[in-house]
Amino acid sequence: MKDDESRIATIDGPRPSSLPATTTQTRVRTIVVNGAAHAFDGDTIDRGQLAALAFPDTAPSSTQGLTVAFRGGPPEASTGLLPVGRSAVVHQGQTFSVSITDKS
Image 1 (cartoon, rainbow, N blue to C red):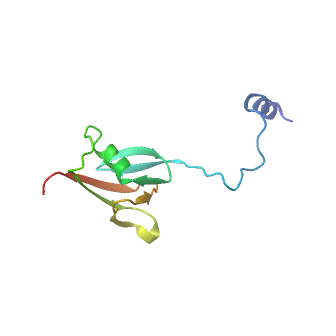
Image 2 (image 1 turned 120 degrees about the horizontal axis):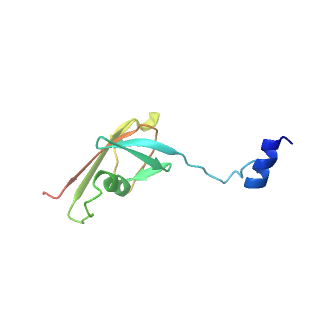
Image 3 (image 1 turned 45 degrees about the vertical axis):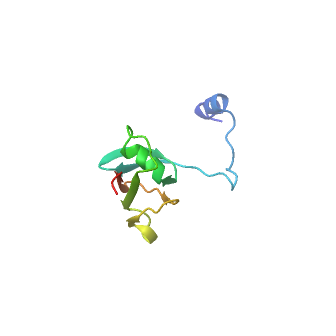
């Protein structure tokens, strides 16, 4: 074993030969929400998470209406609106436009 390899094995412990099939890994992606870039660690994002990124100082209210539009998503849904109860698969550089209204 090379010196570097033995040092890594001592510090980090043994390296697994492979990950189990059920293990899922996420990676941090940069998304743009209302013109501001955010690092997001996850594979999907929901309307509530997007609202919190777009309006961090606004508390959610049952009288508010939320609209989420996106572009730069997966080929089967590259642009569109995010419906209530759904989440979007997150892609690097994906853009979200989030608006809140409390007017009827």
